[in-house]
Picture 1 (cartoon, rainbow, N blue to C red):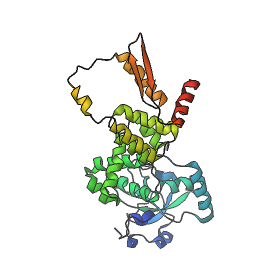
Picture 2 (picture 1 turned 60 degrees about the vertical axis):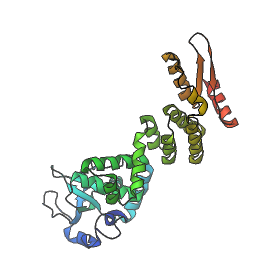
Picture 3 (picture 1 turned 90 degrees about the vertical axis):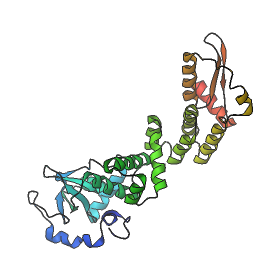
Picture 4 (picture 1 turned 45 degrees about the vertical axis):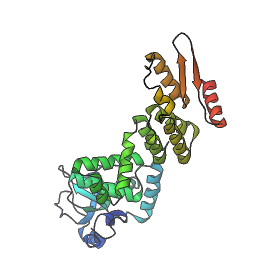
Length: 305
């Protein structure tokens, strides 16, 4: 592998002496039925290409694809995609799926390709490297790709970090995002919360407070710093005090499960801490707020409902 192993495109995966774009003129026009020598560059028919089943990237911006297609119409595909043979005579796209999609939009029938023999693990690794270097993956896609690479190759976090050229702590922090509940993962994938917001949520010890913080981030558009500060405050409320320690021997009253359920639903609805005191017949509801803006937000939610 080249010294600058994490450069752009095909050079991110192969050394410079493995790639000779000039070979395209001698290997071009290859028939789809002709056996191709591995490690060579040729023009492949787009109809023979299949998406990489281990492609970590799931979302492709239609606007960005149209822009790339316009560029391809003007200048063609300058950088070959990376492919590997599949059993039915076609080819899996290992790297460059975005280019192949844009080439189709541009009306091309063939595209330059670099052929390699790859195992499933290597297909994932190469696609992951390419997407990371282009910053094409959202935080959740990147975390899932690390996890899949670890499982497929039985690799440690340290080994994965070396494979993709990242610090081990970066890989570890990314994998932590997979501990989020599914709805929070979905918000992360859709860009409604950032990886920084997600880490702030995960730092909260109490699961109910995690839900409160998530609702406040999405409902009040909290910055990452504000979310981190609120997370610290929430964790601070769960530090045992001397007063509470003295009462630890007192039997804990069992709460009505219906009240607990209503309390949780109010927390999710209002995005703040809600306490119900009493029983199903009589009691009080305490709704907490943390600023004038927060009070206005809670009031608006209640009024709209």
